[in-house]
Length: 148
Image (cartoon, rainbow, N blue to C red):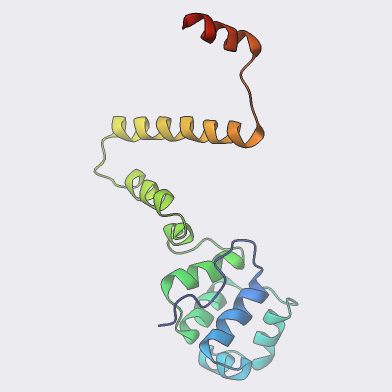
């Protein structure tokens, strides 16, 4: 099973991702097409970005290249399809992946899930403010200084 066959960037187009995966697999376009049950010209058109794949085609091509689940899911995403496992697209962000797993755990009580979502929303707002250079209004800063 081939791992890290394609760039794990969400902005890579399908043609580029397919070519990277095929080359990492050591397959020619003809051999990949034969393994996946397609004509050579189909793979060629996919790699030249002159044809869009079906979801089934992406899965067949991934299987023919022996891609790891995570690489297959990146290939699906590059083609504009939802991956089989969304968490695979979060692999480079382990904390986000952990949060995703916890929120999708059916045994987590609803009130705990909502508390976690609230905490995440608050942290996200703080990060967005830091990125945008948000500053509290002068009256808020004055009130805070007077409270000390």
